[in-house]
Image 1: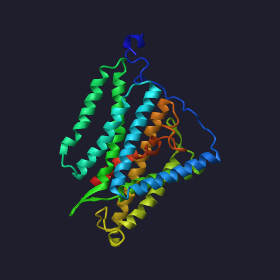
Image 2: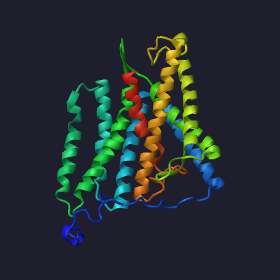
Image 3: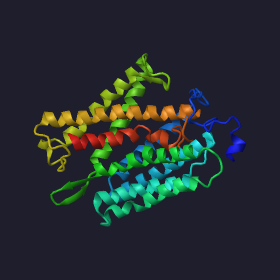
Image 4: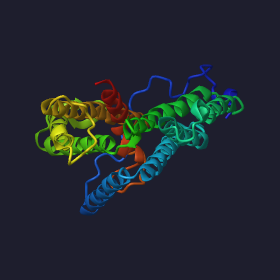
Length: 325
C-alpha cells in the first residue's frame, strides 16, 4: 500500500502501532472449560514436560529441540503481529536468522567448528537484508516492520541461545554438557505455575497486575514461589558436596551444605520473579493485539509463545545469576 494512498491525514504514524493506543479487549474471553478441554490441556502439558525432560538428557536432542522451538516461536511472533497489526514483517528471514543464531551461539560456546566470530556473519547479513529490503516495499510502516523483526530476534532468539551458557560448562578435562541447570529452570517454572494456580484459585484476592493479567494474584505468585523453592531443595540435595556419589558434577562450588541449599533457593527465586515478568510481558503484547492466545497449535495451551513466555525472561536471568554468584 503506497504512503500517499494510505495516509491522508499527513502524519506518518496515523493508524500505526507506534501511536498511543489503549489495550484491546481479549478475544474469546472466559469460555467455560469442558471436560474435553481440560483433558486435552492435561495430556498436552504432560507430553510437553516429558519432551523437555527427555531431550535435555542428550546434547544432540537438546540442540535440535530448542533450535526448532526458537524457530517456531519466532515464526509465530511474526505471523501474529502481521495478521493483527497488518504489518509486513519478513517472517521467513527473521525465523531463519533467529534459528541460525541459536546454532551460532552453540558453536561459539563449544568451539565445535573453530570458526570464531565468522560464525555470526550470516546473522549480520540477515540484519542488513532486513534493513535494506524494507526500502523497496510499498507503504509507510517500514519502521514498524523493522521494529517487530528485531524485537522477535531479541525477545526470542537471544534468551533461547543463553540456554547454552548453562548447558556447556568448562571443567578441567575440557567442556561438559550439563542438563541439570536448564532442567532446574524449567522445573522451577512448572512448580511456580502449579503453585500459583493451586493457591491463587483458592486464596487469590489481591491482583498482581490487573491491567494486564486480571487473574494473577499476589497470593498465587507467592505460593508458586514457595513451591519452586521447595523444588530447588531437591536439586540442592542432589548437588550436595556430601552426596558426590549421587551427582559427581557439583553445579555450585559451595563451601558448606547450608550455602549450597541457599544458592539453589536463590536460583529458584530468580526464575520465579523473572518468569512472572516474562508472563506479564507476553500478556501485555497479547492484550495490545487483542488476542487471548499466541496460537492454537497446542490443545488447551495456545501457542508456542504461551508455553515459553516465562522462560524467555527466566533463562537469561538464571544464566546471569549462575555466572555472577
